[in-house]
Image (tube, rainbow, N blue to C red; front, side, top):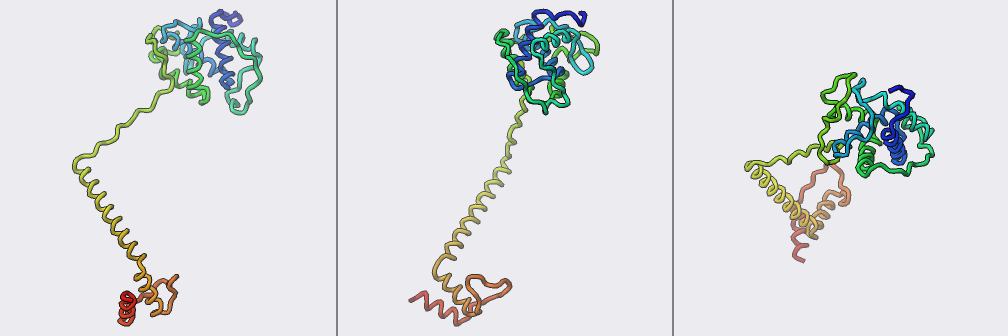
Length: 249
């Protein structure tokens, strides 16, 4: 195809509506992202059993799918929108421009695929979608640079593609009998320690204990509220007698 030629109606419509949906999604794409979105739209449409979404003749170019057929498609898109392509280096610094959305719709399958593509990649770095196309699409797996990509290698499953792989779940390790026994013994020890603490705490709150502390304070002439650190006190025979008398009053 001569680069000055017009795109086919199929490719032009798909490209135009994809660009509009990007803007509606809050994504002003650069040319790299737009190219990869179109490629994923083609692959996803084949997988869903709906055939190709475009007439673009894809090939392995540098680090992923590309085609000379994209040039007239992109030119046509910009003839309609006249917004230009966002610069990849400054994509995060540019505000989304005002635009008139395309009200025409593609098929339900293609509109659903576009939504899935944008949900997966629109708010990620462009390298993410490039890497996905390079590593996880069937036409790219056995491709050689400069050669056409065969979209017939995409399996027709009727199931929408999963563009973002879910993390693998790691099963919870199972305890052995000995480990379970040791855990049970540890729980019993913790429960015993807690019970002794509660018993000790209750004893400290009894009046007789508070009285004993007051006697000790008087014996050593220190404050019962904030005793200085490092002072050792002992209960004398007189203090014990006075404490005993207090308990029986």
